[in-house]
Length: 295
Ligand code: TA6
Image (cartoon, rainbow, N blue to C red; front, side):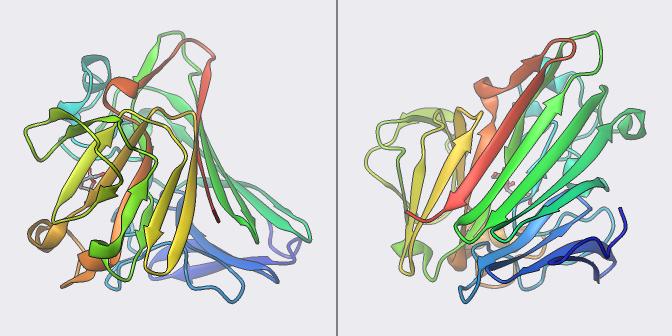
């Protein structure tokens, strides 16, 4: 893929990582080959639609704090995954290895209204230290003045069933987490990882009063309401949604989470997590996606 065929898209180096930047008349975006990690998107003349830590670092094999990390082929801590997912994992690290692997640029398509970029990852024996399995991944980004869409397709090229969990770990900005809520999860069941993974039912909109870390049994379209306005998230191929804010104490323990930054962000993660994990038989594919747009 040589530059020069592109009108709005170009290569960039950010920190120690290779990035692809889109400077379209109607929107802008930045994503990294490492992790197929989108860190920036906004329509022209609008503030960033994604949150990125002021102290995020762009170094090989270091997860970037913010944007939309790709958690694959497992979500969360290995031990909290179903046995057929857990048995393939040979590390205690959270969220899999795809977000620190270097993906390959497959295609860039540009029109007067949209830019579509696709990256691939051959999850093979190169990752045997972390995971026993083989899968082919294709991440397709679609950017327009109306929003951005990520679609991650996993294909099982092998003859054995492949069980995995995953999430598009979207970080969103807010001017005040205490005046922020997530609508669309009312009356949905959820597992609260902060209450010994006990089961609960959501009453009303999700609001934030300190650390929040819940896996909802829902793939509903959601509205994130902040003092600045509303953002719509629409899931594809998902029946579980993670809502997370670290609060003060947890943020202080995490990488690249300075000071009070936790008050300016929340994560709403489009997932196949816990009982929503997926199994692919020989040759089968599953697509997980999220559309981030206006209400
Ligand atoms: O999605 C929520 C969560 O699993 C939290 O428990 C916290 O660990 C967060 O992800 C961030 O994880 P990371 O490995 O990116 O620091």
